[in-house]
Length: 143
Image (cartoon, rainbow, N blue to C red; front, top):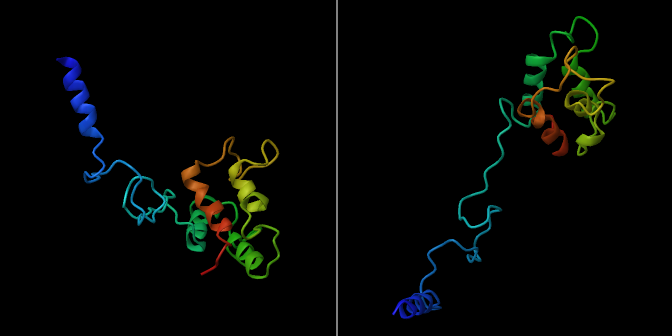
C-alpha cells in the first residue's frame, strides 16, 4: 500500500498542465539579473558613501583631509578632480580601478611600501573604500 501512495504522489508532481507556482527560472519575461525572482535588480550598497565624485570627496573629508589639507601639500579634491578632468591619468585611470594610484593607495595593493591613510597597518574596511573602485570603473564621472 505504501508503494501505491508513493507512486500516486510522484505521478501527481509530474502534471505538465499544472500552473507553475514559482521556484524555477521559467519566466521568459524575467529581465532582472537576480535568478528565480521578478524583483528589480538592487544596486549594491557601498557603506556610508555612494560611488560618485561626491562620495569620493566625502571620503576625503572623513579620512584624508586631516593630512592633506588645502593649505599644505596636496589638496586631493583639486588634484583628483583636475587629474580626471584633464585626462592626466596620474591618480585615476577612468574605467580601470586596478591601474589607478588612488585605488591602490587606499586598498592596500601597494603594501608593505605604501598605504593611505598614513600610519595605518591595514586598509580601511571595504565598505569605506569599495565605492572608489566602483566610481573609477564607471569612468570616474565628475558630475
